[in-house]
Every structure is written in C-alpha cells, then in structure tokens.
Length: 322
Image (cartoon, rainbow, N blue to C red; front, side):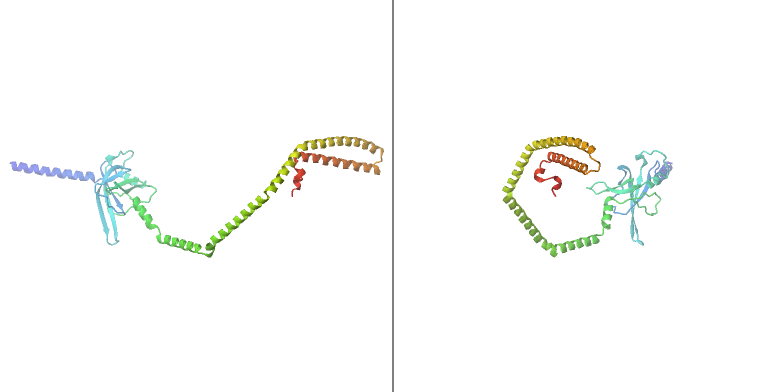
C-alpha cells in the first residue's frame, strides 16, 4: 500500500515538473518587446573574438539583456561565413511608455535602431553588444532562417577604420609620390637650378657694390649738400622776416593805385563825354584804362602768391616746377 502511494507521488511530481517546464518554455519564447523576456538575433560580419555567452546587451550604456547563443554558419557553396548572435532582452530593465505592441521592435528598427560590438575592457578584450539609434548610418540585415526578430548591425569603429584603410589605393599614392620625387630630382639637377646660386651671388655682389658707391657719393658730397641746405634755410628765414614788409608795401601801393584808378576813371568819364564816341583820343584812353586795370590785377595776384608761398622767390611758382 505504501509502495503504491509512493508511485503516485513520484508520478505527480514528474507531471508537475513537465507542466512547469512547458510554461517556462512558453514564457521565454515570446516575440517582440512585450512584458516577458524576448529573444532577438543579430548578424555580424567582423570577428567575434572576445564576445562570449552571457555578455551584456546594453542600450546606450544601460544593460537590458545578455547574449544567450553564438552560432557560426559556414556556407560551402558560397564560401561564406555567417555569425549569428542570439540575445535575450529583459523588458523589466526599462520603463516602457506609450503604446506597447508586438511590432514595437520593428518600429524601432525603422527609426535606426542597430547593434554594434564594443569593448568592455581594454585589459580583458571582452566585447559586449551596444544598441543605439543610427539613422544616418548604413546598416546590414542578412537573410537568415530564424524565428526571432533580427536587429540590424553596423561595423565596429575598428572595423570601419580597417575598411577605410583597405579602400585606399596605396599603389596610386606610391606612384604619385614617385612622380613627385622624380620631378623634384629633375628640377634640382637642372642647369638653371645649378646656376641659381651663382646668379644670386652675382646679384648680391652688384647690390653691395651699388650700396657702397651710393654711400661713398653721399659721404663725398655731404659737406656741400649741408652747406647748400644751410644757405637755403637762412634765405627762407630772411624771406619770412622781410615778407610782411614786402606784402604791406605792395598792399599800400595797390591801395594808392586803386585811388589813382578811381581818379583817372572819373577824369576819363569826363573826357569821354567831351570827346566824340568814335574819335581816336577816346579809343586810346579806353585802351590805356584796360592796361592799367590788368596791371593792378597782376600786382594783387603777386601779393597773394607771395603771402601764401614765400618760398616761390627761391623756387619759382608751384606750377613752374616742371
């Protein structure tokens, strides 16, 4: 009787364990970002050295899951290698707001969500999966047979640098450098370049000779030049002292001349009335009056010129320098 009771207990325990296992499998097999843990896959082109099962999966530095499986698929027909990384995302590690639907992951991917391998530590060399939004970068999505949704991937910064270096045409650069070096060699070894130092020395020697000649000429003529400048300075000083007297004398003469012209004009007007309009004396008197008027204007101009430019007594008028 006791043996039968033990068998019943064992059977119930096994059935309960099967039920729990089935419920757990259904719980972890959900898709999308819902309220239960979700599984996603990512396909990387570069090396996965340093990425291990259990490595963190982070969204902008915050851990939201871990790597659960790494598969390497070798296609013998196409001679290609596909590396699939499966990860488990725990929605409990983030606060979901808004409309949470089964297609939420697909919408995030459309907005630029992508996975990239980053280094956890430079000392250990371990890698982790970093999720972030890269709408301006080209992402890679591979055709694989998987029941889990796929997150696009982008190369690591080191992989991008390696690809950039591989795309450089080093042969063309070497050819250009060689061409430039040959051109410089031809230029430096040309006859014109070889003669350049001699030409420069000749030019410098001629310049030095001209400078020495000019210095000697200035030294030889320095006393005479100094005496001439001193004489000119004394003459200008004398003119500056005598100029007010000369100007006053000219102005006094011009005033007396104006008075004489007024008197002569009055006399001529009387003569014009007495003489016939077309007579010879009247024409002569008119011509004389015009000449006297011109002479007076010339004297006034001379007085103003001397007052503004006293140095013209030595150098002449400014307009006569040429």
